[in-house]
Length: 66
Image 1 (cartoon, rainbow, N blue to C red):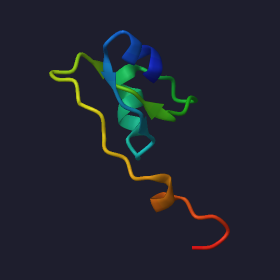
Image 2: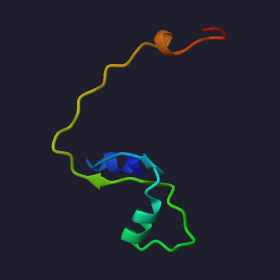
Image 3: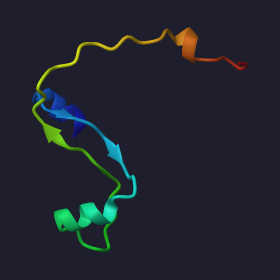
Image 4: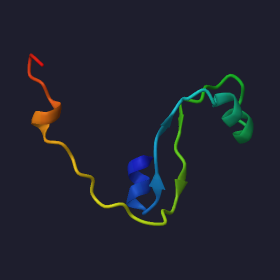
């Protein structure tokens, strides 16, 4: 869903379960026996962020030892 949204120019983010499932279930009319695993809000962004600066692999990957 997140990748498809980006393809259509929509902004989104994955929000994992954070203790708000009862509120979400009530707001969306989700049956009591179902669980909320995550939500992903959708919308058109005001601006498109540029590329992020990333650390090199040697800064974040350790081989066999730290």
